[in-house]
Image 1 (cartoon, rainbow, N blue to C red):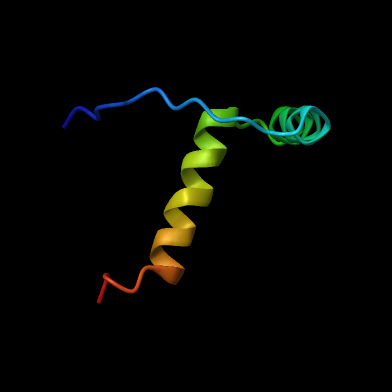
Image 2: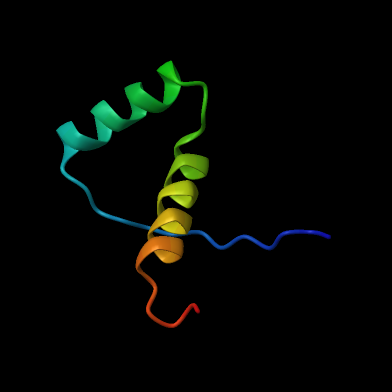
Length: 51
């Protein structure tokens, strides 16, 4: 099954973004993949619509 992707533009503090890029690189994960993981975790933990 093919996944569909959509581009997301966000604005972050420059220092925070640079630190996060370094974190992702050090852990061998792409920035986009890590953001997707964080979003998925938030939805699983905090989504009141999911039962």
